[in-house]
Image: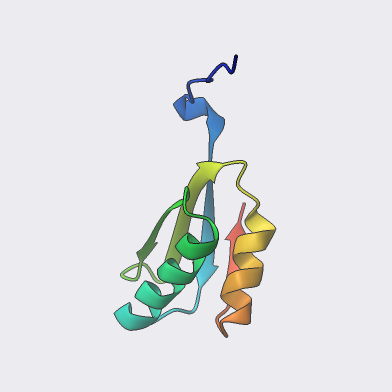
Length: 81
């Protein structure tokens, strides 16, 4: 029999990235692409911030995958530590 482990907030990882995304249409496109690949991630942008912040939250989040996907789409994406 399988046991289900209840996820806690402490199991979730949050990564913050600086991007060069300017337009809402670009933001929406990036979110769609990442969520298609990683449907369990919570993703949002703050385009009002001077660093055009991308925030990604998920369990077993691999930040390098996010950077790679955004870069492949033609945008700058740098993890903030």
